[in-house]
Length: 277
Picture 1 (spheres, one colour):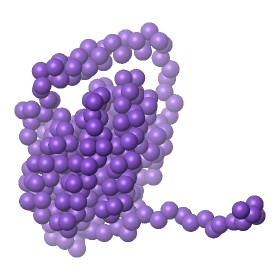
Picture 2: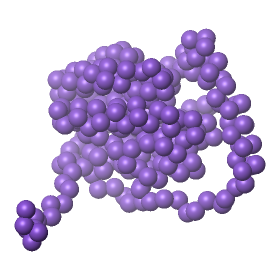
Picture 3: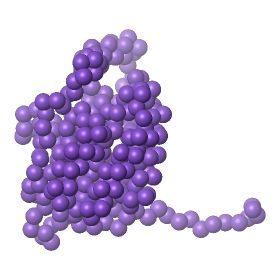
């Protein structure tokens, strides 16, 4: 190639935004909204999907008399349940947009078959698309800064590649959590180091709106937080020990007994009901 050969720059063009009127969110604790506490409900959560639904209802404005929203996500669910019963439940609600985010709980298992997870997710996306609904996916976030979870980084990266390929084949939208550098800041995460804070959920909502082709009111979703105050090694060690005692040990005990944090939990919004912006 001639060194003086130049190609014109072509800016990235996102999808053309459209108006949705029936949105169903399915998934695990991420979509349920942990740990974005809902002040109006005891032990209830808001989360990025609820926040997104509020924005979509506002976009409908006066053009549509009613915007319907359901959230079928339940903490602890594996992809088999999300891509199975939750998808069937979602289809019965005749949505025009479905967000399906799952697989994170599977990836934590060292022996997880990531290619099989990708195939299962693709089957679910194909089924949803064949119904006429648009589909919104999300990649895992990059766990490279997480002391224990970083061991799953290779599995998460492979699953991320599957998600982008599935989206391309089935014309689906994708929230690029892997590329959100701000999420590598631990202040975006709750004390359990698994779920996002309210600020983290807010930023994911803005990312979701952008993925759907909308201009977002907040442009700081990728901006890092101000520098954190450094802590000593002793303080870090005490914090890690406290986290292991309060969160890691109960998770291990549930695994040993074949239990899930969501065994006694049902979907917070199982029916498609009206929602205002």
